[in-house]
Image (cartoon, rainbow, N blue to C red; front, side, top):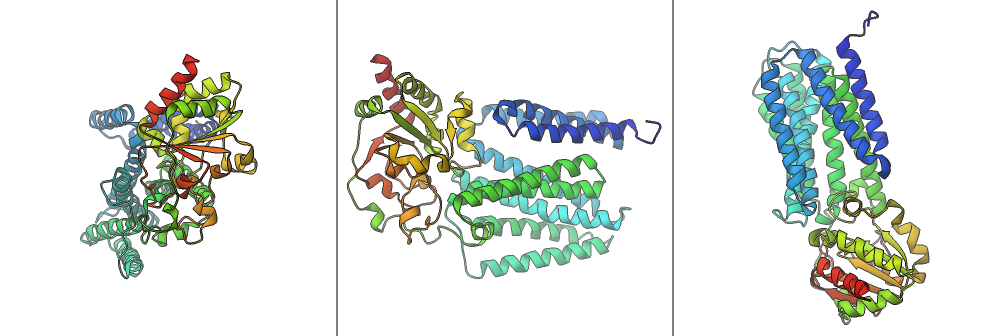
Length: 458
Protein backbone atom coordinates (compact mmCIF):
# COMPACT_ATOMS: atom_id res chain seq x y z
CA UNK A 1 0.00 0.00 0.00
CA UNK A 2 2.99 2.30 0.56
CA UNK A 3 3.62 2.35 -3.22
CA UNK A 4 0.50 4.37 -3.76
CA UNK A 5 -2.17 1.64 -3.98
CA UNK A 6 -4.94 2.72 -1.62
CA UNK A 7 -7.24 0.25 0.15
CA UNK A 8 -10.06 1.43 -2.12
CA UNK A 9 -7.90 0.85 -5.19
CA UNK A 10 -7.04 -2.64 -4.00
CA UNK A 11 -10.74 -3.45 -3.57
CA UNK A 12 -11.43 -2.13 -7.07
CA UNK A 13 -8.78 -4.45 -8.49
CA UNK A 14 -10.25 -7.35 -6.51
CA UNK A 15 -13.72 -6.58 -7.87
CA UNK A 16 -12.45 -6.47 -11.47
CA UNK A 17 -10.67 -9.80 -11.03
CA UNK A 18 -13.82 -11.34 -9.56
CA UNK A 19 -15.82 -10.19 -12.59
CA UNK A 20 -13.34 -11.91 -14.90
CA UNK A 21 -13.32 -15.10 -12.82
CA UNK A 22 -17.12 -15.13 -12.62
CA UNK A 23 -17.46 -14.78 -16.38
CA UNK A 24 -14.98 -17.61 -16.92
CA UNK A 25 -16.86 -19.88 -14.51
CA UNK A 26 -20.16 -19.16 -16.24
CA UNK A 27 -18.71 -20.59 -19.46
CA UNK A 28 -19.39 -24.15 -18.23
CA UNK A 29 -22.63 -25.58 -16.88
CA UNK A 30 -20.88 -27.35 -13.99
CA UNK A 31 -19.48 -24.08 -12.64
CA UNK A 32 -22.13 -21.62 -13.88
CA UNK A 33 -23.87 -21.28 -10.50
CA UNK A 34 -20.58 -20.53 -8.78
CA UNK A 35 -19.75 -18.03 -11.51
CA UNK A 36 -23.06 -16.28 -10.92
CA UNK A 37 -22.35 -16.05 -7.18
CA UNK A 38 -18.81 -14.73 -7.76
CA UNK A 39 -20.10 -12.11 -10.23
CA UNK A 40 -22.84 -11.01 -7.82
CA UNK A 41 -20.26 -10.70 -5.03
CA UNK A 42 -18.06 -8.65 -7.38
CA UNK A 43 -20.96 -6.28 -8.05
CA UNK A 44 -21.68 -5.92 -4.32
CA UNK A 45 -18.01 -5.19 -3.68
CA UNK A 46 -18.02 -2.64 -6.50
CA UNK A 47 -20.97 -0.82 -4.89
CA UNK A 48 -19.20 -0.77 -1.52
CA UNK A 49 -16.03 0.56 -3.15
CA UNK A 50 -17.99 3.33 -4.84
CA UNK A 51 -19.54 4.34 -1.53
CA UNK A 52 -16.16 4.38 0.21
CA UNK A 53 -14.64 6.48 -2.57
CA UNK A 54 -17.38 9.12 -2.65
CA UNK A 55 -18.12 9.37 1.06
CA UNK A 56 -21.90 9.50 0.58
CA UNK A 57 -24.46 8.98 3.29
CA UNK A 58 -24.42 5.22 3.94
CA UNK A 59 -27.89 5.25 5.49
CA UNK A 60 -29.54 6.71 2.40
CA UNK A 61 -27.60 4.49 0.00
CA UNK A 62 -28.24 1.39 2.11
CA UNK A 63 -31.99 1.97 1.90
CA UNK A 64 -31.89 2.37 -1.89
CA UNK A 65 -29.68 -0.72 -2.27
CA UNK A 66 -32.06 -2.70 -0.07
CA UNK A 67 -35.06 -1.57 -2.15
CA UNK A 68 -33.30 -2.59 -5.36
CA UNK A 69 -32.27 -5.94 -3.87
CA UNK A 70 -35.83 -6.66 -2.76
CA UNK A 71 -37.23 -5.81 -6.20
CA UNK A 72 -34.61 -7.97 -7.94
CA UNK A 73 -35.07 -10.86 -5.52
CA UNK A 74 -38.85 -10.73 -5.83
CA UNK A 75 -38.62 -10.71 -9.62
CA UNK A 76 -36.17 -13.61 -9.70
CA UNK A 77 -38.30 -15.77 -7.39
CA UNK A 78 -41.82 -14.92 -8.55
CA UNK A 79 -41.46 -14.45 -12.30
CA UNK A 80 -42.39 -17.59 -14.24
CA UNK A 81 -39.94 -19.16 -16.65
CA UNK A 82 -42.24 -18.21 -19.52
CA UNK A 83 -41.78 -14.55 -18.54
CA UNK A 84 -38.00 -14.76 -18.10
CA UNK A 85 -37.27 -13.18 -21.53
CA UNK A 86 -39.41 -10.17 -20.61
CA UNK A 87 -37.59 -9.91 -17.28
CA UNK A 88 -34.22 -9.97 -19.03
CA UNK A 89 -35.40 -7.22 -21.37
CA UNK A 90 -36.46 -5.09 -18.39
CA UNK A 91 -33.10 -5.67 -16.70
CA UNK A 92 -31.33 -4.56 -19.87
CA UNK A 93 -33.50 -1.46 -19.93
CA UNK A 94 -32.76 -0.73 -16.27
CA UNK A 95 -29.03 -0.85 -16.97
CA UNK A 96 -29.43 1.52 -19.90
CA UNK A 97 -31.53 3.92 -17.81
CA UNK A 98 -28.92 3.94 -15.04
CA UNK A 99 -26.15 4.80 -17.51
CA UNK A 100 -28.33 7.50 -19.05
CA UNK A 101 -28.85 9.05 -15.60
CA UNK A 102 -25.11 8.99 -14.83
CA UNK A 103 -24.35 10.64 -18.15
CA UNK A 104 -26.92 13.38 -17.59
CA UNK A 105 -25.51 14.17 -14.16
CA UNK A 106 -22.02 14.53 -15.59
CA UNK A 107 -23.36 16.89 -18.28
CA UNK A 108 -25.20 19.18 -15.86
CA UNK A 109 -24.27 22.85 -16.26
CA UNK A 110 -21.49 24.36 -14.15
CA UNK A 111 -20.01 21.01 -13.16
CA UNK A 112 -16.21 20.94 -13.24
CA UNK A 113 -15.85 17.91 -15.49
CA UNK A 114 -13.04 17.27 -17.95
CA UNK A 115 -13.82 17.42 -21.67
CA UNK A 116 -13.13 13.69 -22.14
CA UNK A 117 -15.55 12.89 -19.33
CA UNK A 118 -18.25 15.05 -20.93
CA UNK A 119 -17.74 13.27 -24.25
CA UNK A 120 -18.04 9.81 -22.72
CA UNK A 121 -21.01 11.00 -20.62
CA UNK A 122 -22.86 12.08 -23.77
CA UNK A 123 -22.14 8.64 -25.28
CA UNK A 124 -23.59 7.03 -22.13
CA UNK A 125 -26.75 9.14 -22.52
CA UNK A 126 -27.27 8.20 -26.18
CA UNK A 127 -26.49 4.49 -25.90
CA UNK A 128 -28.20 4.18 -22.52
CA UNK A 129 -31.34 5.83 -23.87
CA UNK A 130 -31.41 3.51 -26.88
CA UNK A 131 -30.92 0.47 -24.63
CA UNK A 132 -33.68 1.65 -22.28
CA UNK A 133 -36.41 2.41 -24.80
CA UNK A 134 -35.43 -0.47 -27.08
CA UNK A 135 -35.69 -2.87 -24.14
CA UNK A 136 -39.13 -1.55 -23.22
CA UNK A 137 -40.33 -2.17 -26.78
CA UNK A 138 -38.75 -5.64 -26.70
CA UNK A 139 -40.56 -6.30 -23.41
CA UNK A 140 -43.84 -5.27 -25.03
CA UNK A 141 -43.31 -7.55 -28.01
CA UNK A 142 -42.19 -10.52 -25.88
CA UNK A 143 -45.16 -10.16 -23.54
CA UNK A 144 -47.64 -9.67 -26.37
CA UNK A 145 -48.55 -6.15 -25.25
CA UNK A 146 -47.20 -4.84 -28.58
CA UNK A 147 -47.81 -6.42 -31.99
CA UNK A 148 -44.99 -8.90 -32.55
CA UNK A 149 -44.91 -8.14 -36.28
CA UNK A 150 -42.53 -5.41 -37.47
CA UNK A 151 -44.00 -1.91 -37.42
CA UNK A 152 -42.76 -0.36 -40.64
CA UNK A 153 -43.79 2.95 -42.21
CA UNK A 154 -42.55 5.07 -45.14
CA UNK A 155 -39.16 6.80 -44.73
CA UNK A 156 -38.65 5.03 -41.40
CA UNK A 157 -34.94 4.41 -41.92
CA UNK A 158 -34.46 7.99 -43.12
CA UNK A 159 -36.20 9.33 -40.02
CA UNK A 160 -34.03 7.05 -37.87
CA UNK A 161 -30.86 8.32 -39.56
CA UNK A 162 -31.90 11.95 -39.11
CA UNK A 163 -32.71 11.28 -35.46
CA UNK A 164 -29.28 9.74 -34.88
CA UNK A 165 -27.54 12.68 -36.54
CA UNK A 166 -29.61 15.13 -34.51
CA UNK A 167 -28.72 13.29 -31.30
CA UNK A 168 -25.01 13.46 -32.15
CA UNK A 169 -25.25 17.18 -32.94
CA UNK A 170 -27.10 17.94 -29.69
CA UNK A 171 -24.57 15.82 -27.82
CA UNK A 172 -21.79 17.90 -29.36
CA UNK A 173 -23.40 21.14 -28.18
CA UNK A 174 -23.97 19.59 -24.72
CA UNK A 175 -20.30 18.73 -24.46
CA UNK A 176 -19.14 22.13 -25.67
CA UNK A 177 -21.53 24.14 -23.49
CA UNK A 178 -21.65 24.02 -19.72
CA UNK A 179 -24.68 26.24 -19.31
CA UNK A 180 -27.30 25.14 -21.88
CA UNK A 181 -29.40 22.95 -19.59
CA UNK A 182 -32.23 22.71 -22.14
CA UNK A 183 -30.03 20.58 -24.40
CA UNK A 184 -30.09 17.64 -21.97
CA UNK A 185 -33.85 16.89 -22.15
CA UNK A 186 -33.68 17.16 -25.94
CA UNK A 187 -30.73 14.77 -26.07
CA UNK A 188 -32.56 12.32 -23.78
CA UNK A 189 -35.75 12.38 -25.86
CA UNK A 190 -33.79 11.87 -29.08
CA UNK A 191 -31.89 8.90 -27.63
CA UNK A 192 -35.12 7.28 -26.42
CA UNK A 193 -36.79 7.98 -29.78
CA UNK A 194 -33.94 6.30 -31.68
CA UNK A 195 -34.31 3.22 -29.46
CA UNK A 196 -38.03 3.01 -30.19
CA UNK A 197 -37.50 3.36 -33.94
CA UNK A 198 -34.75 0.74 -33.87
CA UNK A 199 -36.80 -2.03 -32.25
CA UNK A 200 -40.38 -1.51 -33.46
CA UNK A 201 -39.35 -2.55 -36.99
CA UNK A 202 -37.95 -5.89 -35.74
CA UNK A 203 -40.29 -8.91 -35.76
CA UNK A 204 -40.92 -11.41 -33.00
CA UNK A 205 -38.85 -14.11 -34.69
CA UNK A 206 -35.75 -11.95 -34.22
CA UNK A 207 -36.35 -11.14 -30.56
CA UNK A 208 -33.62 -13.50 -29.22
CA UNK A 209 -31.09 -11.58 -31.30
CA UNK A 210 -32.51 -8.24 -30.20
CA UNK A 211 -32.39 -9.18 -26.52
CA UNK A 212 -28.71 -10.10 -26.74
CA UNK A 213 -27.92 -6.93 -28.73
CA UNK A 214 -29.72 -4.72 -26.21
CA UNK A 215 -27.78 -6.47 -23.47
CA UNK A 216 -24.62 -5.44 -25.30
CA UNK A 217 -25.87 -1.85 -25.60
CA UNK A 218 -26.47 -1.67 -21.85
CA UNK A 219 -22.93 -2.90 -21.21
CA UNK A 220 -21.38 -0.40 -23.63
CA UNK A 221 -23.39 2.41 -22.03
CA UNK A 222 -22.14 1.33 -18.59
CA UNK A 223 -18.55 1.31 -19.85
CA UNK A 224 -18.91 4.88 -21.14
CA UNK A 225 -20.47 5.91 -17.84
CA UNK A 226 -17.47 4.33 -16.10
CA UNK A 227 -15.12 6.36 -18.28
CA UNK A 228 -17.01 9.52 -17.38
CA UNK A 229 -16.74 8.69 -13.67
CA UNK A 230 -13.18 7.34 -13.90
CA UNK A 231 -14.44 4.07 -12.39
CA UNK A 232 -12.28 1.06 -13.38
CA UNK A 233 -14.83 -1.39 -12.01
CA UNK A 234 -17.67 0.03 -14.08
CA UNK A 235 -15.44 0.16 -17.16
CA UNK A 236 -14.44 -3.50 -16.77
CA UNK A 237 -17.97 -4.72 -15.98
CA UNK A 238 -19.51 -2.74 -18.82
CA UNK A 239 -16.88 -3.87 -21.30
CA UNK A 240 -17.39 -7.52 -20.35
CA UNK A 241 -21.16 -7.24 -20.79
CA UNK A 242 -20.83 -5.30 -24.03
CA UNK A 243 -18.29 -7.68 -25.57
CA UNK A 244 -20.07 -10.87 -24.49
CA UNK A 245 -23.38 -9.46 -25.74
CA UNK A 246 -21.90 -8.71 -29.15
CA UNK A 247 -20.35 -12.19 -29.35
CA UNK A 248 -23.68 -13.76 -28.47
CA UNK A 249 -25.49 -11.56 -31.00
CA UNK A 250 -23.07 -12.65 -33.69
CA UNK A 251 -23.56 -16.31 -32.75
CA UNK A 252 -27.35 -15.91 -32.88
CA UNK A 253 -27.20 -14.25 -36.30
CA UNK A 254 -24.95 -17.05 -37.55
CA UNK A 255 -27.50 -19.59 -36.31
CA UNK A 256 -30.16 -17.78 -38.37
CA UNK A 257 -27.85 -17.32 -41.38
CA UNK A 258 -28.48 -13.58 -41.26
CA UNK A 259 -26.38 -10.49 -40.63
CA UNK A 260 -26.95 -8.02 -37.82
CA UNK A 261 -27.81 -5.34 -40.38
CA UNK A 262 -30.43 -7.64 -41.89
CA UNK A 263 -31.99 -8.18 -38.46
CA UNK A 264 -32.00 -4.47 -37.65
CA UNK A 265 -33.10 -3.02 -40.98
CA UNK A 266 -34.92 -5.69 -43.01
CA UNK A 267 -38.27 -5.47 -41.22
CA UNK A 268 -38.51 -9.28 -41.26
CA UNK A 269 -42.03 -10.62 -41.25
CA UNK A 270 -43.82 -7.40 -42.11
CA UNK A 271 -45.20 -8.89 -45.32
CA UNK A 272 -45.83 -12.37 -43.96
CA UNK A 273 -49.31 -13.71 -44.53
CA UNK A 274 -49.68 -16.90 -42.57
CA UNK A 275 -53.10 -17.58 -44.02
CA UNK A 276 -52.09 -18.28 -47.60
CA UNK A 277 -49.55 -20.26 -49.57
CA UNK A 278 -48.70 -23.85 -50.27
CA UNK A 279 -47.49 -24.36 -46.72
CA UNK A 280 -50.97 -25.31 -45.52
CA UNK A 281 -51.72 -27.96 -48.12
CA UNK A 282 -51.98 -31.57 -46.98
CA UNK A 283 -53.72 -33.49 -44.26
CA UNK A 284 -53.00 -33.18 -40.57
CA UNK A 285 -52.66 -36.56 -38.82
CA UNK A 286 -53.52 -36.39 -35.11
CA UNK A 287 -52.20 -38.93 -32.60
CA UNK A 288 -53.11 -39.69 -28.99
CA UNK A 289 -50.79 -40.28 -26.00
CA UNK A 290 -51.31 -44.05 -26.09
CA UNK A 291 -50.21 -44.35 -29.71
CA UNK A 292 -47.33 -41.98 -29.01
CA UNK A 293 -46.23 -44.33 -26.25
CA UNK A 294 -46.31 -47.24 -28.68
CA UNK A 295 -44.08 -45.33 -31.11
CA UNK A 296 -41.60 -44.34 -28.43
CA UNK A 297 -41.55 -47.75 -26.75
CA UNK A 298 -40.45 -49.37 -30.01
CA UNK A 299 -37.91 -46.64 -30.87
CA UNK A 300 -34.18 -47.20 -30.47
CA UNK A 301 -33.21 -43.59 -31.05
CA UNK A 302 -35.22 -40.52 -30.04
CA UNK A 303 -34.47 -36.81 -30.17
CA UNK A 304 -36.44 -34.27 -28.19
CA UNK A 305 -36.66 -30.74 -29.64
CA UNK A 306 -37.90 -28.20 -27.05
CA UNK A 307 -39.47 -24.88 -27.93
CA UNK A 308 -41.35 -22.01 -26.33
CA UNK A 309 -44.45 -24.17 -26.05
CA UNK A 310 -42.60 -26.33 -23.53
CA UNK A 311 -41.97 -23.22 -21.43
CA UNK A 312 -45.62 -22.15 -21.64
CA UNK A 313 -46.80 -25.60 -20.51
CA UNK A 314 -43.99 -25.86 -17.90
CA UNK A 315 -43.44 -29.35 -19.24
CA UNK A 316 -39.69 -29.63 -18.65
CA UNK A 317 -40.00 -31.85 -15.57
CA UNK A 318 -42.46 -34.17 -17.31
CA UNK A 319 -40.04 -34.29 -20.26
CA UNK A 320 -37.21 -35.33 -17.96
CA UNK A 321 -39.38 -38.11 -16.54
CA UNK A 322 -40.23 -39.33 -20.04
CA UNK A 323 -36.55 -39.24 -21.04
CA UNK A 324 -35.68 -41.31 -17.99
CA UNK A 325 -38.26 -43.94 -18.98
CA UNK A 326 -36.91 -44.03 -22.53
CA UNK A 327 -33.31 -44.46 -21.36
CA UNK A 328 -34.41 -47.22 -18.98
CA UNK A 329 -36.08 -48.85 -21.98
CA UNK A 330 -32.72 -48.89 -23.78
CA UNK A 331 -33.45 -45.95 -26.08
CA UNK A 332 -30.75 -43.50 -27.07
CA UNK A 333 -32.11 -40.04 -26.14
CA UNK A 334 -30.76 -36.60 -27.02
CA UNK A 335 -32.14 -33.11 -26.60
CA UNK A 336 -31.49 -30.98 -29.68
CA UNK A 337 -31.59 -27.24 -29.04
CA UNK A 338 -31.63 -24.63 -31.76
CA UNK A 339 -29.69 -21.46 -30.75
CA UNK A 340 -32.73 -19.23 -31.32
CA UNK A 341 -35.35 -21.53 -29.77
CA UNK A 342 -37.51 -19.70 -27.25
CA UNK A 343 -37.65 -15.97 -26.64
CA UNK A 344 -34.11 -15.27 -25.46
CA UNK A 345 -30.62 -16.72 -25.90
CA UNK A 346 -30.26 -20.00 -24.00
CA UNK A 347 -33.94 -20.09 -23.05
CA UNK A 348 -34.30 -23.84 -23.61
CA UNK A 349 -30.97 -24.58 -21.94
CA UNK A 350 -32.17 -22.80 -18.81
CA UNK A 351 -35.46 -24.72 -18.78
CA UNK A 352 -33.77 -28.10 -19.16
CA UNK A 353 -31.11 -27.26 -16.58
CA UNK A 354 -33.89 -26.31 -14.15
CA UNK A 355 -35.36 -29.80 -14.63
CA UNK A 356 -31.98 -31.39 -13.92
CA UNK A 357 -31.32 -32.74 -17.41
CA UNK A 358 -27.63 -33.51 -17.83
CA UNK A 359 -25.59 -31.23 -20.07
CA UNK A 360 -24.15 -34.28 -21.87
CA UNK A 361 -27.63 -35.06 -23.22
CA UNK A 362 -27.84 -31.74 -25.07
CA UNK A 363 -26.90 -31.48 -28.73
CA UNK A 364 -26.84 -28.80 -31.41
CA UNK A 365 -28.48 -29.09 -34.84
CA UNK A 366 -25.15 -29.68 -36.61
CA UNK A 367 -24.51 -32.65 -34.31
CA UNK A 368 -27.74 -34.42 -35.30
CA UNK A 369 -28.75 -33.26 -38.78
CA UNK A 370 -26.17 -35.38 -40.67
CA UNK A 371 -27.59 -38.57 -39.14
CA UNK A 372 -31.26 -37.56 -38.92
CA UNK A 373 -32.37 -40.49 -41.13
CA UNK A 374 -31.26 -42.87 -38.36
CA UNK A 375 -33.60 -41.26 -35.80
CA UNK A 376 -36.71 -43.33 -35.16
CA UNK A 377 -38.79 -40.62 -33.48
CA UNK A 378 -38.31 -36.86 -33.29
CA UNK A 379 -40.42 -35.43 -30.46
CA UNK A 380 -41.02 -31.72 -31.07
CA UNK A 381 -42.40 -29.99 -27.99
CA UNK A 382 -43.72 -26.54 -28.77
CA UNK A 383 -41.02 -25.65 -31.30
CA UNK A 384 -42.14 -24.17 -34.60
CA UNK A 385 -39.97 -21.91 -36.74
CA UNK A 386 -36.72 -23.77 -35.93
CA UNK A 387 -38.06 -27.03 -37.42
CA UNK A 388 -39.87 -25.57 -40.44
CA UNK A 389 -38.65 -27.37 -43.62
CA UNK A 390 -39.58 -24.33 -45.71
CA UNK A 391 -36.53 -22.58 -44.32
CA UNK A 392 -34.53 -25.15 -46.28
CA UNK A 393 -36.77 -25.92 -49.27
CA UNK A 394 -39.07 -22.97 -50.03
CA UNK A 395 -37.35 -19.88 -51.42
CA UNK A 396 -40.53 -17.80 -51.09
CA UNK A 397 -40.63 -18.39 -47.33
CA UNK A 398 -39.49 -15.49 -45.11
CA UNK A 399 -37.53 -18.10 -43.13
CA UNK A 400 -35.62 -19.33 -46.19
CA UNK A 401 -31.92 -19.75 -45.51
CA UNK A 402 -32.19 -20.11 -41.74
CA UNK A 403 -30.52 -23.33 -40.55
CA UNK A 404 -33.07 -25.60 -38.89
CA UNK A 405 -33.27 -28.87 -37.01
CA UNK A 406 -34.23 -31.15 -39.91
CA UNK A 407 -36.66 -33.35 -37.99
CA UNK A 408 -38.72 -33.95 -41.14
CA UNK A 409 -36.02 -36.43 -42.23
CA UNK A 410 -36.55 -38.64 -39.18
CA UNK A 411 -38.64 -41.79 -39.54
CA UNK A 412 -41.51 -40.32 -37.51
CA UNK A 413 -42.13 -36.85 -36.12
CA UNK A 414 -44.49 -36.24 -33.21
CA UNK A 415 -45.32 -32.56 -32.72
CA UNK A 416 -46.89 -31.40 -29.47
CA UNK A 417 -48.97 -28.24 -29.89
CA UNK A 418 -52.15 -26.75 -28.53
CA UNK A 419 -53.39 -25.82 -32.01
CA UNK A 420 -52.30 -25.24 -35.59
CA UNK A 421 -51.28 -21.66 -34.88
CA UNK A 422 -48.14 -20.22 -36.43
CA UNK A 423 -44.85 -19.63 -34.65
CA UNK A 424 -43.58 -16.35 -33.27
CA UNK A 425 -42.39 -15.32 -36.75
CA UNK A 426 -45.97 -15.61 -38.02
CA UNK A 427 -45.14 -18.30 -40.61
CA UNK A 428 -47.12 -21.53 -41.01
CA UNK A 429 -45.08 -24.72 -40.69
CA UNK A 430 -45.28 -27.22 -43.54
CA UNK A 431 -43.83 -29.88 -41.22
CA UNK A 432 -47.28 -30.33 -39.70
CA UNK A 433 -48.63 -31.63 -43.02
CA UNK A 434 -45.84 -34.08 -43.85
CA UNK A 435 -46.69 -37.77 -44.26
CA UNK A 436 -44.37 -38.81 -41.42
CA UNK A 437 -45.69 -36.20 -38.96
CA UNK A 438 -48.23 -36.84 -36.23
CA UNK A 439 -49.80 -34.01 -34.22
CA UNK A 440 -50.36 -34.57 -30.50
CA UNK A 441 -52.72 -31.72 -29.63
CA UNK A 442 -53.24 -30.43 -26.10
CA UNK A 443 -51.29 -29.14 -23.14
CA UNK A 444 -47.72 -30.42 -23.52
CA UNK A 445 -47.24 -31.06 -19.82
CA UNK A 446 -50.36 -33.20 -19.57
CA UNK A 447 -49.66 -35.02 -22.84
CA UNK A 448 -46.08 -35.87 -21.86
CA UNK A 449 -47.23 -36.95 -18.40
CA UNK A 450 -49.75 -39.32 -19.98
CA UNK A 451 -47.09 -40.85 -22.22
CA UNK A 452 -44.71 -41.19 -19.26
CA UNK A 453 -47.54 -42.79 -17.28
CA UNK A 454 -47.89 -45.47 -19.96
CA UNK A 455 -44.22 -46.33 -19.49
CA UNK A 456 -44.61 -46.43 -15.70
CA UNK A 457 -47.62 -48.72 -15.98
CA UNK A 458 -45.88 -51.12 -18.39
